[in-house]
Amino acid sequence: MGFFDLPRELRDEIYTHYAAQDGGYLYNQRTRRLRTANGDPIDLSFMQTCSQVAHELRPVIFEKNTVTFRTGWVDRETSDRAASFAIALKWIHIKTAYQLYKVRKAITEDMIEHAGVDFPQCLSLLHRLRGGHETIAPTPLQMVVDWRLWRHPPSTHRGFVKFMLSRGKGTRRWWEFWKDDQVLGQRPEQPNVASLLAGTPDPWMIPNPAEIASLKEQCISSSSSKSDSPIYEDGPIKRYFSAAALAIQFLNGLDPSVLSAVRKIVLDEAHASIAYSECHGLGLVSILQQYPRISIRRQVDTKTMAITSKIGQPYFEQLVDQYHDGQVWDIDGEIERVRVSQAFMRWFEEAVALSSRLSPDRLSLIFHSRNTASTLALLEQMLEDARWQRTLESLAPRPISPLSLLDSCCFFSESFTRVMRGIQQGEGNVRFDIGDLSVCDSNTAIPVDRESTPARVGENWMAHFQGTYVEPSPYAGRKDLLQEYMEDEVQD
Image (cartoon, rainbow, N blue to C red; front, side, top):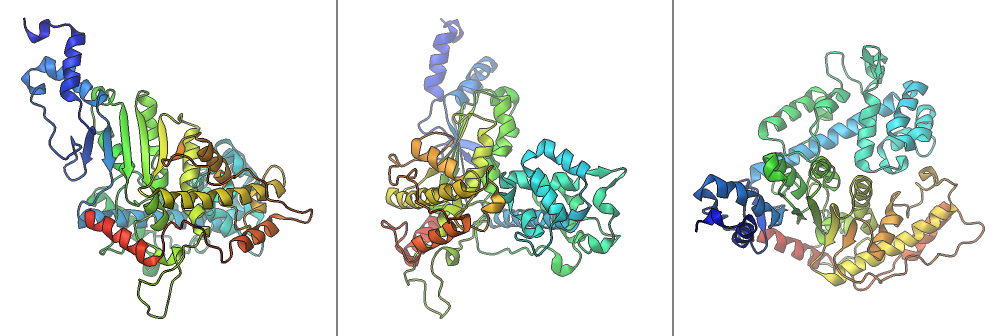
């Protein structure tokens, strides 16, 4: 009796026993190939016996194994390329936002009407932006740059700026009717910064060296002066492309018949990565919509999220007391508690935006930690912040206007309180993997009197935390924080 004389169901059982790997498969960024969880090559000898076995076995390999993508160190060239990409993106977005500010008074009612179709929450602010004066708080420039004002996530805000600058007026864009010195001070022979947006890669792309060189050249040619060009800082700091970006690059290169067999993907964001990594889940939406049986768990390292910046550079001076008298790093300092909630709010906003497109079981965001006590301390701080923001929101005009909350320091973002409630109740697509979260009753109202205003609540919030210290502390001090981070770098 030959192998193919066996029923297909029995052959599939054999394929499953052959293909299933403990820990599934791990993507190797250097080789751009999958390996077993322990780093060994995948045994494909059975698949190579004949074409029919290959045809039947190939989908089983992906159906029975979770595929994990993890940020990791590759080499200095990749790190510098990542840094250049992040800096160029940030420069372009800042310059285009500034350009919208410069030509704000040319925004017409027709433009506002068109913007309201795709960005309905921005209508009232567009009217104010058009007629705003620099002495009014917030200033028009603050209104353009601060995504919280527009009640949508950062990625949507960048899309809004691009949308506004792409509005046509006949054969020319509306801002092109302004004099050169009124649009970023650019000379006629230079391309305008807004023209860069059409060809700018998405943040979740991994550009090759030629694309980086082209992007740099475009930024230089669009600068009004040499000092206005982006400054690229190559050096010893390690930068990483996100695990989501690695997955998007790999999955887009698969044959559709193979991709349709994939079931579970884990994105292990073990390091802070570049190019607005909190929004990279957007690049997976089209894949998940086209292949409805794929589910993705995006796992973000909590410690890395709390102590590093968007490009992977430690910013200890922003999180612990900084000394300027030459004292060494082993002096303990307390973490600035106000920055805990600020570190997570962008991730929360982007996750809420994704939840409107995908169910929580399709693309979930899990904050992972190796230290439960540290994570509980972070959560306790954020739940307490959520209580204050919820109280502040109850005092604002209805519907809630971010304009009335912006100057109150405990207003973190539009969805902050909603996400924190979902985390505590185990609902939604954002979770912390530490079990019981009953560390703080976030629903208890903070008493306010009749004279309370959002600004006063913000002042009370600052006074409440002034000089206080929460135990257990996420990190005892600067020495422990730095030591833990350096140990991670050595392991890489």
